[in-house]
Length: 404
Image (tube, rainbow, N blue to C red; front, top):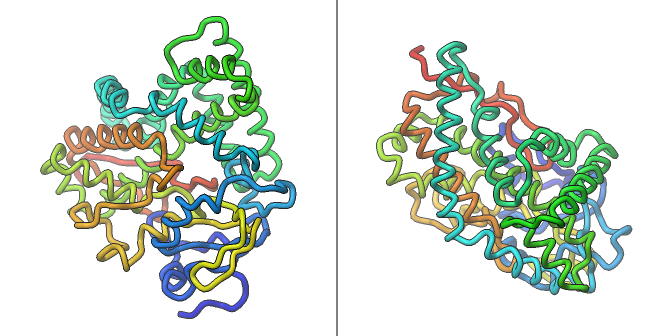
């Protein structure tokens, strides 16, 4: 297989929700930084090799902002990571402030404290699914567990009323949609207005939650813009559940589509769950595209010249399948010797919610293996409804544990 001289159009078609397009392997080998056209119709560079993706994630010559946002390439028609974010002149300062404010909230210590409550929640969801299964014989693990758990946990951490779950879930789905055009951006503004209302409702009775912490910080720091604070709250609420929902779904699919993988976890849930989680993080990066960055200056890298202002799509999925870094790179293998991956990013932008995501995934997969050892998919992989959003994943996960 060779690479067409014409600019490639993203997204590259994939065989199914668990596998990438075979062309990614060719790109890593022959053109690790390749010119592409984004789904929004704009030019960008697609970065596919582990070495360059890791480098660019930590390189201060690249950022999320752009000196001329209106002229910057867009990655998609969704309202999530569609184009530049933040202020070009103050991006590093603003990001450092954000990390300083949020690090205590997402500390490993707090995640351990949440763990016991999380186990109770998971067992409650499983109790309901078991009861439903007695009647129906098939249950939707997405609707009954993969979606509600991350939503409940981020609500508690941020201080969002759980009664608003359906509202912000709908707004999140619309924001990330790649098929509804301007409606995605309208949903983002609706989400912003919802968050303004929540922020103002909290202002008179601040609690021990992340949104209250941010409101306090904004009121005490004139340089911390109010709109910036509200948009950060929106981003936390969206990212804090969306990516974990997808990872739970994809993880279950990786485990159940090859029975030996599931049986190995069932045989030793507590001993194997950490390795399973890391392999899910390696292979289960959400979406078909990647992380968006813009060059702040001209840079020569991997045989190409990237010019200031150029957009780059860093494919975490492709980098985490690099055969120069991983043995049998395309295979789901929790026992592999290589433990590093870019599933949580790298460098200054390493995912601040990594401890929360890992805790949720550990609790979920261990509980499933202990309580539903005979679980299997009730539909073939290619029959599952796939989400047409920037973050991807599946919108259903039908399972059963009755004898065939």
